[in-house]
Length: 381
Image (cartoon, rainbow, N blue to C red):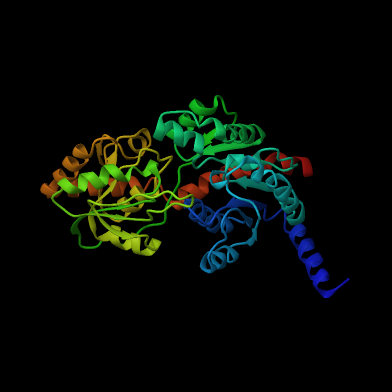
């Protein structure tokens, strides 16, 4: 046996010896969107609670900074497979079950946490499988286009439906998204809700008389066109930070608002901390981290009137119809013209944000993990 093989064997034995005290969780992620931040924050919180993590990445490879962050919390393996929403054909996803099954076997995993339902399709494992639906193409079409997915994308429905059926438990980040999943897919067994969380933002700074918004504006679901048109009628400048070109050639031109482009997350948080008002015109938001981060930073919120935002921010924000740029402009101007209302809503939003902390998210997820692991623990005893 080579020295390297000996080290690998010893590491595997050490993993097995520590298994009972430190359950080992395999988490899938990607380097493009919010799932990366979700996975890192969750692993950081649950590592302190005694869990160990292996990360399985799919899609475009992570940046060196992302790779270092993940490797500080666990092992990182990047799989040669796409994300379902970037795949051009269903057959591209057929490699995923074998890749995950091999990684689970090699890593002596106790629990698999998949962050796309389609990743559970055709998966055969003897450990519990948790599926978290952060978003999906099917519910996106239902919300944004008010239609089923096109015929040539029906495989998205089939693979997700199969993934829900394989899962030991399914989670959504809000009751509204859970209801949308049921409306789109029918009954889903073991479906529950764990709200997302976010780390405390920058201390509230002196506010500038601006409206700030952040999003992937190439995504129709972010509804940037309404806010861009509203910006032509607002008393304060509107700043729309974020990418305007998508991975599949999507493009959105910002014309009425200021467009600083895609900013590092730290810079987005800094600008939020200085903005008196933060807006989100989204049509489709299973949760929506931007309003939460803005609320933590002491901004007043103007949000599209969609079920998710009503569920999370009722009584702590102003709402405008998602298709009405004049209503958005009126709501933004009402806050610009009324400092007392603006301060009151900012304080209400900041208090509401305390319901959505990373600590609460980690505690809720630990309860889910423990519930799924308990039968396995009982069998091993």
